[in-house]
Length: 278
Length: 278
Image 1 (spheres, rainbow over the protein chains, first blue to last red):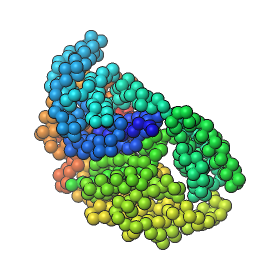
Image 2 (cartoon, each protein chain N blue to C red):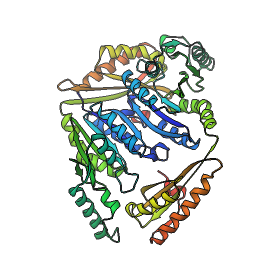
Image 3 (cartoon, each protein chain N blue to C red):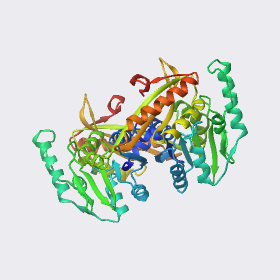
């Protein structure tokens, strides 16, 4: 089975709609392509009680990974680590390795002429207070280290909210962990374009195909494009344990869809990138 | 106080990163500009147990509104209403008004030549099964009606996931409800651009201003642009009960920020649209 991933995004700016939560989509897409499964994502404010509640209720579902984004910075409203510490019942402690990472980064910025001077102020130091037993993760793009924690079978990875910092830490530290857990799985997806039948009329065919191919998940999306006008995208995917081949199962299911729908009098073909761009 | 809004987005396509949850940002932005407050957003899969759990835990926090998007359509994996019904302990029942809406829409599509024929098939009918005591909301852009439910002091509004359908229903039915609850509030926000000081160095100034102006919420965002290189955006906002004027308080706080930061040797000015575009 695929490893399970839950996401906790922290940040008021996301809840006032000022900023789009592009991190959530990027992570969902990466996790899926690494053959993990994102099963839930929650977005909470920069408030201790909200973060604690989100982490606790997420831990209750025992996912393999909890990823958090945001709230690792130096300001008073960066409180993700405090929230995680509370939720786990562990104290926050000054972590020497994290402190060294912050100092090295500060000195490098001065050496490169990007900062005039480096002082280890209290706000800087704050970023090195991690929950007990946490492992700091080097942030190659910014000051705030990422954080890895283990709690039972769940690994919690706290990442910054700044997208390029988050992506760097995810790629370096989280990807290998997911890949390791997914090494016995293979994934395949494809989309069909259906023109001339509504979602309601397609529904019985989709049911029939999913009954015959229970490994295949099919979802219909009503769409519109300049070229095609209104049409339905049928997105088909399968995640299989080796040696079962997801691609061959999806292709067989796709052929059945094709036959059923063609007989129903509609037009169906494989989707190209143009069709399914958002 | 502002009315509280929680969002429950339903849809596997969002959790595999295939589609960006643009609805969430749009709703967060609209709710904020209507002087409501979105306090939490959760994204769950098309699974009954997940939807039920999300609705229940959201109800436990007693928000004024729970908005849901997605899962109202005719296919087997559209199960938001079933999930809401379970969570509230109410049965799903064929709703005559909803059925009429679906029939009228089907006949109009035929009359306009957009469909060849209209049959009230089971998948079509499924969209008219609503939790007991629900009020269907006309969907001017699609077949699936929206749904309004009251549960204690909370109003639950289920909307389709297709963005233009969701937006039409929100604007027609939800906006007036939020406006009514927010009529005694006024909101103001502005952003400053700070160049030459890092987030850590700014942090004590921000703390000082927020202590002097507790109504004002200030958040710093590290940014980069071609014109400015790296800079910090300070976003300042206040939501006040009349007759207290949010604008005047934010402007006073902004002046204090300006003075503190200028004395600190950095450059600060009001942000323009170019600076804060994402």
